[in-house]
Structures are given as C-alpha cells and as structure tokens.
Image (cartoon, rainbow, N blue to C red; front, side, top):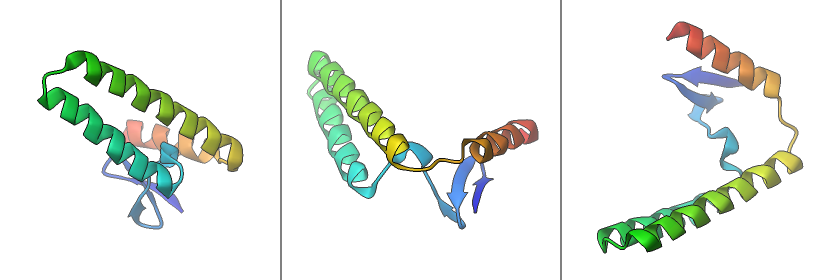
Length: 88
C-alpha cells in the first residue's frame, strides 16, 4: 500500500521513491553525486555543471524507461499528493 508519511511516499511502511526506478539506478546516482561533489570541492564549476547535466540526463532516461516498463497507478499517486497538500 502506497501512503504519504511526513511528506514522503511509503510503500508498506518503508520509504519509497516512485521515480527512482530500479535498485541499480541508486548506485549510479550515488556515483554521479560523488563526481558532482568532487568537482565542487575542486571549485571546478564548469566540470560540476557538466556532471550535473549528465546526472539529470541519466535520471530522465531512467525515469522514462521505468515508466514504460511498469504499470503505474497515477491516480493513486495524485490522490495521495492532493491529500498531502490539503493536510499541510
């Protein structure tokens, strides 16, 4: 069951990121975040911006791929979002 608790989605009581896709994406995302942070620590803003663009592009592709490969109950998600907004 998908619910919202403290402003976050939960599936069966556990935090759930709807658009994060498969578990392998999490590891890639962490690597991308590390590369962005490393550039920032070197104050290499051009490289950081490039890494951020790459990260956003990879995330977009993963989201589209995930959406095409899975049945997604959008009405349930939007209903939960409306309820969360009304409560806050």
